[in-house]
Structures are given as structure tokens and as C-alpha cells.
Image 1: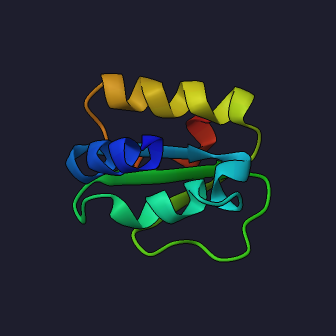
Image 2: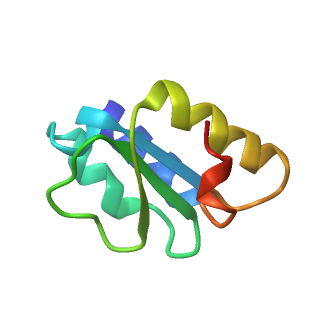
Image 3: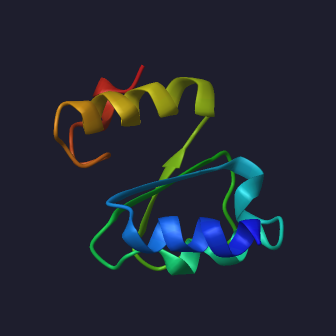
Length: 88
């Protein structure tokens, strides 16, 4: 039931942020494929075996990267398009 609800939200979301173990724990990992094609899809993780198609990988700690990504979204930018040196 919760997986179905989450999938519906992902299908309509303009921005997607997956963090850490959500990429390897099932059934949560299956949800990434449900995101819209044109959504700004981002993954924050220290390691990544295989990046899902259409996602941008931000390597590092969520405590540093999530605030940066959210700030970019609030400024109306896609996450990761700006100079990577801006990340704290």
C-alpha cells in the first residue's frame, strides 16, 4: 500500500532526491524507476554500484549535499548544473 502511494508521488514529482541505502533496499530501490523522464532526479550516496538512468549522482555525505541541492531547487535551478566547487 505505501509502495503504491510512493510510486504515484514519484510519477508526478518534478524533483526526486534519493539518499544512501534507499538505492539498495527493496522495495524502495524499485521506486526510482517510476520517476518522470523530465524530473530533476538526484542521488546522494558515498558509493554507487550502478547509477539509474536519468539520475545525477552526487558523491558525498548527505549532511553536506542535501542542503546544497535543496538550496539550488529553491533558487529555481536544477541540482548539479552549477559549479561543483560551490558545494561546501
